Image (tube, rainbow, N blue to C red; front, side, top):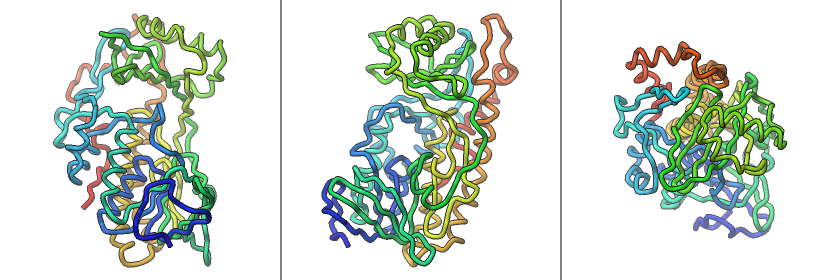
Length: 407
């Protein structure tokens, strides 16, 4: 058993054994939010993160109004807003140079009626720093989990390796928030099902000079999303699934597509080399059952989302909020039973199904390509001709199908 002090990293001897109320695999948005909320309830929580820090490029960084509302409810909104960020009250799209509104957040029943862009490493640092104020919180960095521990048919912990040797963490509950390629999920015997995604996404940096500006979403001859990172632009280009191999020919064709979408963007990416481009293979999948006795999956471990709308982070955070509200009181008293874990899935499965259904429907329009003189797609014509519909799309993107509150 570890001593009562809770170091955050790199302080564990060989063959460490830790006992805790809940061990969470993955220090992403869902894992850290769950750890924070459980620690606020007075529980002993261990979050295990395989990386030494959160500094990784090309991670989702859209913080939706629903998540900002949650930050306000737990007293972190002012700290959040003190960090560098950019706000967007409407999501707009430039279709062959014509600007359209896709989603309007200005009428949402939230204190912050904007979608905020913040590098995910800053957001995760905020959550980790807030959690570390509670004596029961422990964050193990540079520690990779690779298996589960079973006793009498129940999962009672996890094993892995840290900077100084092997580690075993025993807990009343294991929560897997380690993402769509989770090793723990496979070790627990859980296999996702789903519809093959029709698209992949290419992420790359675009150089920025003083006065440069690119529309957030440009479409018509394909689609590209461009986020202003102050010192550079981070861009995401949507392509048909399986069409990128990283070859020089692939890069040439990508630059040609970008040039058709935006001549300025085509010029700005002229010097990109294949190593500058990072491929995200989009997957739309979910577990039929999110749990086995002793282990619960949330976030991308339970349901991998498309990047469309940037809703994956916020769905994962809402999973964490529901998990803390439902299971926190149980963990304080006893070992959770399978029926307790089913309550989380019952609560969160419906918004996941709805969101994935919408994302599947969006795959065709996102991949569509047309000439500049072609008519607008029907869905865009409706949003243009009936602006009040953008409030509905704003609510779906900004709040989601079932927002959660800590209680």
